[in-house]
Structure formats: C-alpha cells, structure tokens
Image 1 (cartoon, helix red, strand yellow):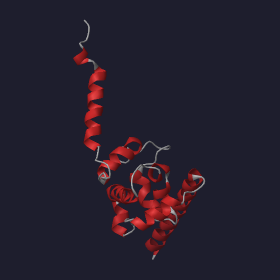
Image 2 (image 1 turned 90 degrees about the vertical axis):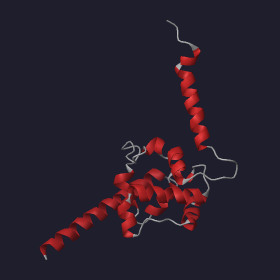
Image 3 (image 1 turned 45 degrees about the horizontal axis):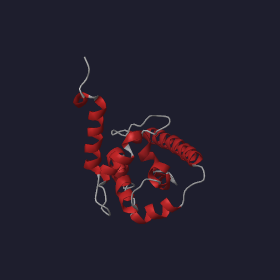
Image 4 (image 1 turned 120 degrees about the vertical axis):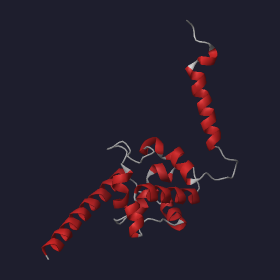
Length: 160
C-alpha cells in the first residue's frame, strides 16, 4: 500500500521545522531570550540537561562551577567557540552565559562567583586564545590542583 503525500514523514518533518523556526524567529533587531538562545545555540551539543557528550562536549553540571573558580575560567566561558562565535549580541551572550551558570552551577551562584557582566563579555569575546584546546587543558589542570588543595584542607580540618 502506497503512502499518501499527506502521510509522508518528510512532510511532517518539514512542518515541524517550520513551526520550530517560527517559534524562535524574531523580528529584525529584536533579541531572543536567554532560554531561546540556549536551545538554539547550546542544547544541540550540551543537551537540554547540560550533560553534554563527554569527552568531546563537556558536562556543564560537573565542570562549570569549577571553571568559575580558577583564573581564566570566566574568560574561557566567553571565549569557547560555541559562545564567542554564536550569532548573538554581547548582551544576549551575557544573559545566556548567566542563565547557563544559574541552571548548571548553582553552587557558583551561592559562592557569588557566577554573574558575568556585559563589560567582561565584551572584553573577553574580543580576545580569543590561539589554541582553545590547550586553554581547556590548562584550566582542567588548575581545577585538578584546586581539588587536591581542597581535599588537603578538608583533611587538615578533620585532624584539628
């Protein structure tokens, strides 16, 4: 039995794409909400729950709070290609990164390390590391050192 053109799967896929693009389209000059920008520019790789696809795509729920604790981490969040090259304004990127931090690194918010300012985003977006992979490796090494120092501090507190 032959499918009618109305039942063809590609027709439904095209209709779904049209509805999705209409839902996230904005008039010229208007800005998307941070949530819409997350869905459009981040969730495809990091997934809606932030868990990513390790090791290629970081798990935001595990790494993000630590990135904010090390020197260069705030810059990296802005400079990573998915953020720095996203087709959003600096203000939209600021709101987007802050939404991601609030959602996936609440402990950083509690420590007061979370909020990025528009000025930071503008400054860091303009300067990108030559090798983002080397920068990520450097930051992860700092995070590991920080974790070891935290563990040592906890051990010392337990013995006192």
